[in-house]
Image 1 (tube, rainbow, N blue to C red):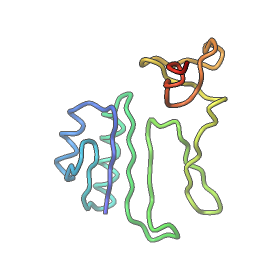
Image 2 (cartoon, helix red, strand yellow):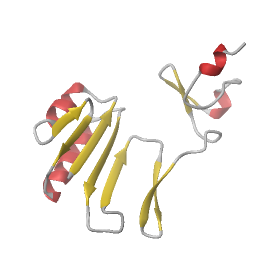
Image 3 (cartoon, rainbow, N blue to C red):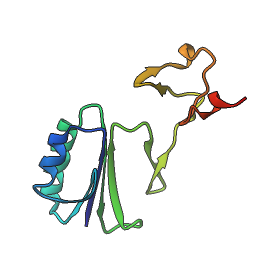
Image 4 (tube, helix red, strand yellow):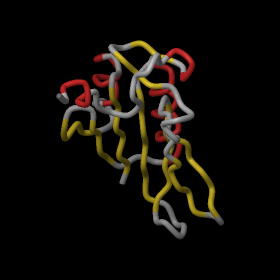
Length: 123
């Protein structure tokens, strides 16, 4: 089983992925492919995703029962005693997004970090 999830990618990439995989939800593709085809699909994803994000997960004969790859994501893949884990970045040490632009910590000017700007609406 092969699962590919893409976000903020060009429509052409999604169309190209439908040649090999079934799109069960917007940006989510599933199917079955050999390792050679899987590698070629991943190469096409990396070339075509642009500034978007992509993740690929497939079945494997290991402790976790799966392997995965990510591209364009701020979360990092970490090997922990043979297990692949995802490390989320510390919001105090990373960049944040606001209205499509990237701001460094030194440029925040008192803005809060995180996923939501709902705190602006507090009284």
